[in-house]
Length: 126
Length: 352
Image (cartoon, rainbow over all chains, first blue to last red; front, side):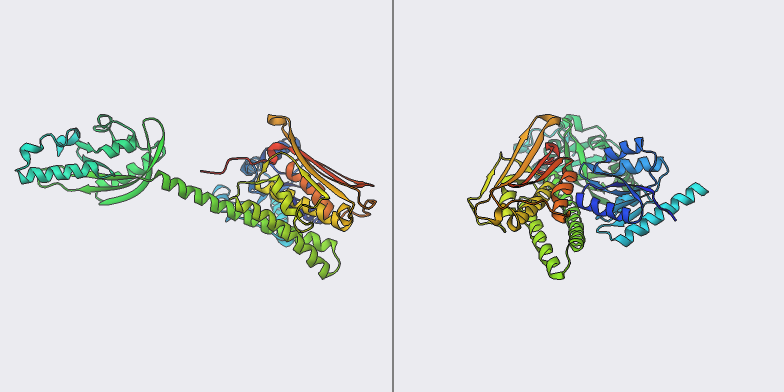
């Protein structure tokens, strides 16, 4: 069982960030952030070495969250995107990334976080 | 036609040639070519000769002498040269007899024009070279408009999804704070109306943002009559971005709703002062907004934290990366927001 892990949350819409934060807490994990900007999330990754996985809204107020995704790839940390769009540009750039369609429900967030943490376990144990 | 590389003086030899029907036909063709309103370039595949008309020179931004004899590809934008070159190769290999494309010319002054080109390989009579003819029609305005439309559609789709997600969050949060379904419905519907008012404000201005004064007016409308003497509204003209219209709108809705139920707007003697201002400059520029109630019933701080508080405090603070103070003073509720101006105002001028 994966419990008490730290999930980085990047989401610029306050209410959505709060709902996701509640859900992450309900799943027994801790929220890293939330961050509205890619820059602050990247800076957070630089100082916090304890992130286990991440949920990234694609379209942020000041651009997209791809700089955060690139940093997560570099650190070999699992992440999923959340988007209201088709996700086509994401699949082109990050072919393996999980994509959650907005509006997302608790069950899909739970399943996605579960899959992210499992992939992390698989990576660390192999 | 080879001599037409120099296009000046179309009518000079006219008088002497008028009696020669073939010459006259050639002249008519040349006049048509020069006045056609579309750019035309024709070149022998062997490189022997080339002609361009005035309109093509005008579109490409080069003088005729600079165009004739030079590689046609170099007039295209560097990012488009390869795709045009590939198509031209296929044309020369007879894989295509004609093609139409929309590509960019990079003009001499470094500006970009979009051009719709139809390019064909034509066969000359026996002995002559084959030649390539390109007809160019400038479509810069149309292309920019189409790009802008694509941007608007995508932007709109993004906003709609976000709005749906916010409605989802509203439903969930209100459900957690209400007991009966009647209660839920009443609260949900009034918040939807507040969101809808913000949406109307920004969509009527094509998402260019809205003035703070208009947001205040629209959000108070369901609660108080127009020009209610108990309410004072004042601040400079500030246009704020669509997402901020939504957040400020939701906060004002919660404050007004609370004031009507328990605060200054529940009594005839109460007053509400709504004010906003800006201060500082550049990176330090700030936006302040305040809601101050006085003269109503004596206020008692709520015993538990409700959804309204979450909206006016946590949501607003997060949305604007700002500070929110919410005080239940005995003489009335006081709410104050201070946030970086850059997180509130319109970030870019409306496109086009």
